[in-house]
Length: 426
Image 1 (cartoon, rainbow, N blue to C red):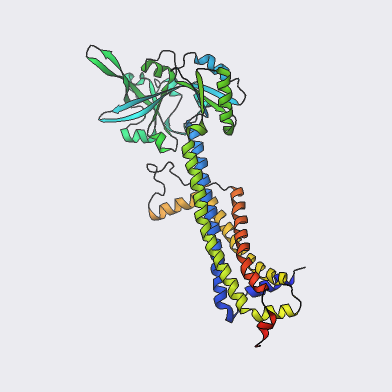
Image 2 (tube, rainbow, N blue to C red):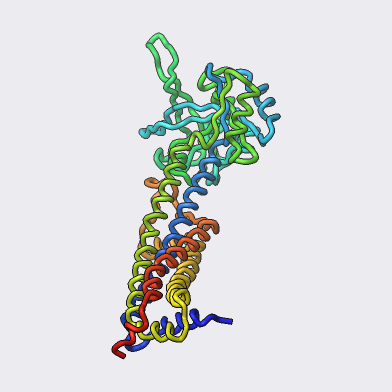
């Protein structure tokens, strides 16, 4: 059975000719809460999407844990890999080589990060994203069987480069490119850079501009020969079953192998980036919550005006036996109804936009002819969105709590009203 307080609060929300201004303020309050809740849900979903997308891309092209030696290049890496894979939580491991180099194509030269990868097991640990042209297998198998290629090009070792790097150098699939190492070789004429020709066997796109414009992959064997490393590698890349246990697994590997081995996990290597994202998320939450607070002040002003206008009604209710608590409930319910309407509408609108944000962003880009997230400026080229229902719950509870707190003072003033004073001149 509905209480009389709730029934009266609903009656007070209905507009009358005398209460048009109060009704407008109430509508503005609902609109303010609607906008605040919708904006909070959309922005927090975008921030979650950014964090998840960045993490997936970073952990795609990078491993969860890397193992290296304090003393320099790792020699007995096959034995070390065997011991690492026996540690609980480790899914796969692969050796890698990391070095700086330069790529030269005709008159274009650019610096790159040269990575040597094991063609047998590297893809069990890392993910290069979309292979736009060619294939990773060509690093191992070569391209001798590709029809129409010159024999001198078909016999060159393969190199896999990012899409942006290919654009910057004007490179296409199955074109030769020169790789220069800063670690030169000694000749009678002095120290000269080490240079070798490779052929582009694949072009990948990770979706991360920084990686697509700076990374180049060659096979582990070719990298060892080119850098004159013998049978050594820079270290071992490791994939774990639970990315949030990477720190614990890295410590377990260190304890098992002992000195001179040391491990670093993805959280440690990208600590500043993810800390900045979390801080930005909190700041955006606080800033957008101000919209809800402004709407709460509108609720307070609307309720105070209703209390002033309903003096006679309140006095009559009190003379009929209504308690102070009952009078307070009338105006608390009224404020909560306003808050609930705005919250529900804002929640529905926010979720609708958040779930369809990618399609909406594409439509806006096509309509106005501009790119919302240029890949060469931002880390990502698409606007991601991920709804976390825990965050939505916090927004709903927080908004309703603010709505409730905004009703306390006006309802308390209404409950303190003196019936005799209100009805003296009636």
